[in-house]
Structures are given as C-alpha cells and as structure tokens.
Figure 1 (cartoon, rainbow, N blue to C red):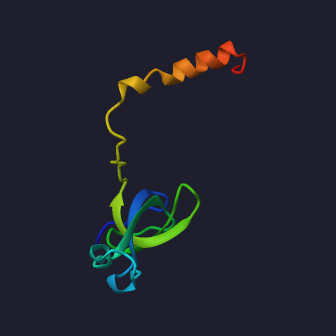
Figure 2 (figure 1 turned 90 degrees about the vertical axis):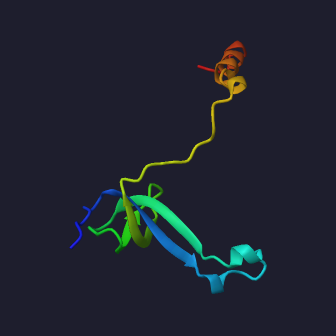
Length: 104
C-alpha cells in the first residue's frame, strides 16, 4: 500500500475538465483532439495517496478535486531573465513621487 500524505500537505492534483468529445466545435481541430486538463496546487483536505482522488483547498480558498499527482510541488514558471532597463524603475518612480510629495 502506498504511503498516505497527511492532511494539510501542499500538493498538486490533475483533473480532466473536458474530454476530447466534449470540446466546443469552434475550437481548432488540433485542440479539439486533446482533453482540456487542469493542474492545481493546494493543501490536502483529507489524507490521500498519490494516484488517488483527493480534495484540496487552494490559496484562494477554492475546494477542488482531482487525482493527486505531486507532493510539495515546486513552482517552475519563469518570467524570463531580468531586463536591465527595467531594474531601476521602482527607485525612479519613488524618487519622482517624493519630489511631488506623494510618497510617505
């Protein structure tokens, strides 16, 4: 038997929102040929094992159900490398607001 993951653990679930046959007809053909899937991260509401159905509570307070796929998942997205021209904007704006007496 697989180890149960404790209630309250940060996890990720997977859920098929729409199967191939349920996709809207106006969706491009290549998109219609695959299911609409979602992955969501949140805290386990009750203990569960990987691969089982589980319910989570998201950071926004939503309750979502799906197949438990990961324990303590990392955020892997990126906004790309820093843009040097934008690095100083925060300081510049604060200085401008100070000059106008709008920043405390």
